[in-house]
Length: 356
Length: 165
Image 1 (cartoon, rainbow over the protein chains, first blue to last red):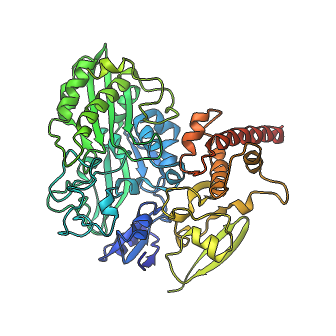
Image 2 (spheres, rainbow over the protein chains, first blue to last red; image 1 turned 135 degrees about the vertical axis):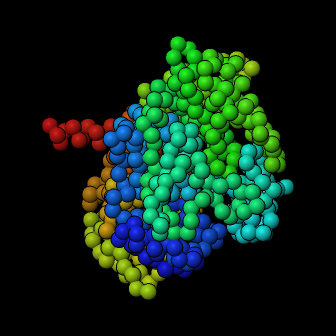
């Protein structure tokens, strides 16, 4: 790990000023940043410790029914907040399907949004990586890339965004509140992360020094609470990043879908909203035929970036299964194995029918 | 640069001068305070051997900067027994053979104490296994560990009830 200056600002504006300096990085829990620093993947010259800033660790219901989650709220505290879980169960399920209990106790909401990819070539300082060293090349192309992106990737970078939390958030129109030197601004989470194109080192639209201070879910997002699930395929059942995941949220009346929300994780450089699929689902019957048609639309732009063509069909099947689980109804409690396809009860129809 | 951090470790408050902000809580415990019960396995947040309680919550000590935890209350494996009387989780790990080589055991026990405090798993083995997935055991003592956690939880809940009554 490189040496760095450690500063602990007392206010958000002090933090923003301190972090505007070149080579500065924010430190919250550090569960991702310290890991990257130990591996020599990133070498910030200054750490601006925001973990002691007051007022950023609250979960508040606002007068318009939206909920505002402070950037320093710990992942586990949000996932176990009873009122939040009742209104946004898919977000809680996604949170509980990520990392380990220890990491969830430390990791913050803001940090989760800005966590870096888990691409092994990004993590290996001896490999070429355009994200780590712009212009260096990409050893993931032609390397071990079965888990890499099938949507939104570019010739310069095929890494995926690893967050589970972001997937239902982006499906539910979450808004990010940002503080910067020019004051406060907010933007849809869907536009926070950038696609790599020719500049994979620029992962978000945040300007130097800008700080995420909160994430907001609109009141309308709670209308999906009866039919909202997160489903995540992993290479082991717990404590693993997604190979493919999906957040599905439906409003259903008389067997027909009134409104649908769908987003995918593990398949793209950012949490991937599937709006074409949502449009197909609106007004359709809540059945396997509709779900399969939505899945085809969601993955229509997909193409392999290496040995990962299997992820495209896998993603279609996860979309179908997530929609079927959502249609069957949100369980009273997050399952013992959150977001797992192995969690009973299994999909309401047999695999053969679901995957037809 | 001269910096310091004030921590309460196993009930004792001390201010520790640090000549370098890079010191993790794990290295501080092991190298500066000689509390070597907390183990350094992967040092990257993957194995759980360094699990300790900070403000009553289990975290990976390897992924936390000591300077950033200024003011925090820390509980390590050295602080859980009462004199010669083992903590109920320690007793349960012995009773259920929840270990073989023992390297991961301090982390397992601290994680289990945190899990029981969180009160999310209930008496379901599947929830206990899921909630302990951040603690790897390369000897594969998982069966005994799960039984120990469930048993210790039962003992501790019963003891709490007795105290309340």
